[in-house]
Length: 471
Image (cartoon, rainbow, N blue to C red; front, side, top):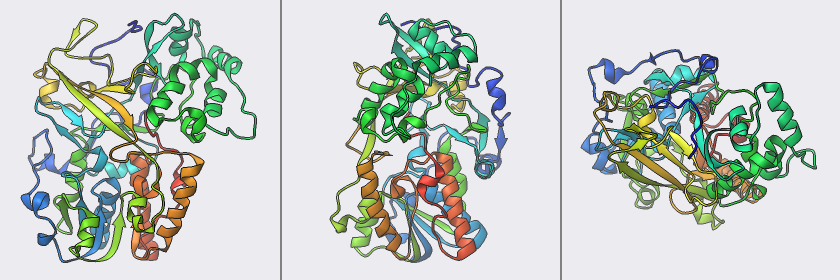
């Protein structure tokens, strides 16, 4: 493949100036109570046997909140209700770990990996940034994505995604050097949508990048990710994609962009494990426990699972989700462009072409919050994860189209009538939340409790704007 120019191994965690200067995270910052107490381990803590296998028999018999799901939404509500109001919570999860989909761990070779795919924290909300820095140290990271895309001669080129000037030059043989030239190129390429607003993602994409980039980068990648062509998806899917005239290759434009120094799981350990008001039980299925009459007495239920699963007895159709399958491989002697130790040029390389079944390859060794063993060069091999989208498996992403939204509105109407239950998070809201949006939503739900005595969202999920969704 033709890889382009200027590649450095490992791929630099910071964008070149001036773009890195826009990130307000300037160095390592934040608090890590576990680290301060003398814990120097890179791996997540080994949880107590009672948490892992104790079941509900050993759990508190009465709590203020029963929280279903140990991910971001549930953890934030439990932490805030405990710290500010002294409320007790029991968090249950049918998985065998805390952290929900952001859970990461150190695998057998000493590399930190994410169980459910790469997670990149970024936010424009100062309140969220101030909150997360209470539970972890963070280091600046400017996420940049590469894609392996055929140029006009059919030669695979490694280019920046979302497209920037160099992307267009490499794939389409242009010689764009300035923002004005890039804007002029876009103006020639773009196809106006016929109505007042784009009717679907194809119209949205064509109106933003034109037919050439749409065909090479977006059309078939979208089909692989959603099993629907852009013409079958809501316009919001493509409208969220950055479209730049500059040389800024950063995937996100948020004020704060960072990675937790010792992984995302450390955040949950600091939030939950040392709080006497919060109890955890893993490997517990809420619905089975409810049917068996094993649930404790509680004041309110906080439900973060799929909303259609909660109302399954209503006999309504299931909502449509996309799942992800990760084909992980340990490569003992990786070599990329004569550089040993790495399989590919960057952490994330997308494969937009239809002839490749997976959507992207993630190589975790590139991230700067790796273990000390990786940083010291003691781990010669590398872990890669080929990512496949699927209709089967655990639900990850709601599928945005008019039919699914109409069905969700029926479920939302049922949820609003359900006394004593707060539906929160991406699955319960049928809305892809970024990490910071999920945290802010949970913080605002807690605000509502303080202000009105009711644990309920302050705003509708769609009011948060689009999340990143599949990348």
